[in-house]
Length: 449
Image (cartoon, rainbow, N blue to C red; front, side, top):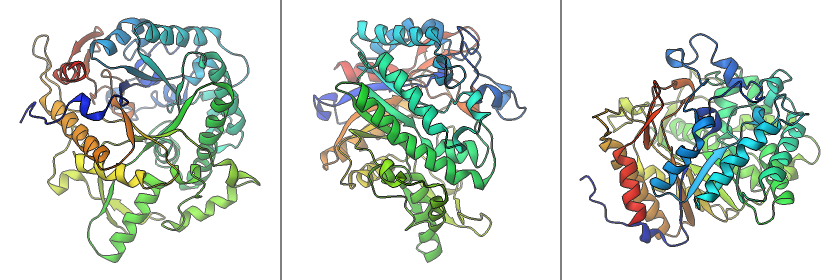
């Protein structure tokens, strides 16, 4: 029943933080202004058929020019924290070398605006938008990325660390390796299984390298990394399906957290990962490890997998939610608040994780504009059910200490273009008008109660 929830903000505790998450490329626009260099998504979006409707992010939400009023919306919705990412190519147009001071100045303005409203800023160092100049030199396939990323992270830590204490190193590295370099569905659009292992290893190393850079340069930093994760179910109790589920779990949930915890790659569940030793250098095993202050959990849906002879290497396929007669979002993702509870319990079982933040969670639905109202009932119910699952996990002993909703406003949703709307605020991309959806109004009421 709408609004019939049995919890309040106070139930989560005074030390539980509430915020919204965004990403630079999805909201900023201004792709060729003030010295910004092109990133891989700029080039990818020009390839016919890669982005729905031929959309691009040249303007997106125009956050670059409207950041002040957009950050004021964060406060209007009752949130205390604002997660945004840094555009690497806005800071370093060539990926390394000369710093673009106009880029530094822009993020300083964003940070200062947050602080003026008593909103705590979160910085994500990398949210998928690699400078195209670095991709031309090998990108994440090249081990040189370790040096490039360390330099970039150092610049950001020194420029913003006096005011920003909450940091996320990488956003969903599995998506970069899988969608960007293996299936080619995301930028840079590379399609080869041969890319997967070197890209995974370099991302995992940069995850710890970035953490150490922030630790060395930002006093009082609260450092984490954000992992996309979905609780995995086997389609049956058939041995082959059970093994397929273990392989899927290794890829979707274990691949980046376990190296950071000093456990190595999960080759026990997926032997193919043992080939990553080809890309290991002396000292890498220790270098992969970093003592994060928290781990960001990004959960939207659960998955069901089964064995497949038609998927070499992984030998599995997902059973689509729409074929399983379960509730789905506009993206076809299963609505599974129980999966949120299960994945929180799964990650909490790791002894090395100090604290968990739900660093992304949200849903895309078809929004209908009714004058100046967006009655997005399905999204409101989605949030209520998932928050209830998080509270249940918290009451059952999971050390989850914060929640960042995805996302503040409708934006450029990668390969989906502008079709997929996840925002708490509706954006009319014809005129950049913002309308707070009913889900956003619900959050405002919930958080101010």
